[in-house]
Image (cartoon, rainbow, N blue to C red; front, top):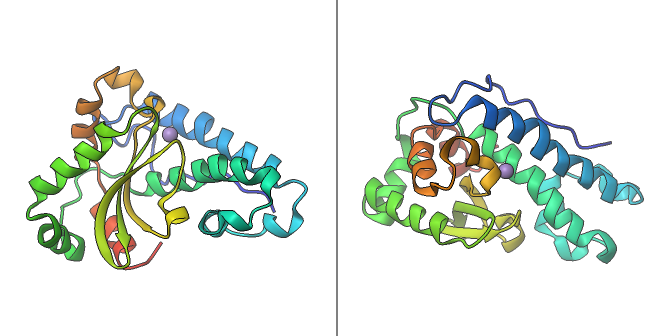
Length: 200
Ligand code: MN
């Protein structure tokens, strides 16, 4: 069974003006598709790995044959991270529910959480991701390089932000801070609440 590009579940222009339609279309149909194609190519000669969820492959990278381990880490990570990211995006969803209470408890306030998340995102040198994760049941902010997944470190992603230039360059050019500010307008907190409860 081959990995396939998941549907977005919304139109490419649904996040305008915060994330532009052109970026969404290229990001989904070109970048995400490329990770999937390369993951499928890497798994070609390993039939026993082809039916596994990409998340399970990433949780146990050491069990992946050495000759494809880097490919699974990069392209499997790219597939998993992007599938996760698309579901996180929706306009006009209120910051609420258990996740809101726990963010306020853990970081002091929503503003303080934003500040720490922003620091993690802007502090990541080169391409990577900023994350809110559950680490042994506790909320934590972190970042990863390239397409590395928090799953490979035993952490559960709750919220993630793609900080690769391909995710913002068309609209925001080099202004990462403006991209970040726009991201906070399109967080699907209902979905984040699901992740916090351990649902998909
Ligand atoms: Mn991306």
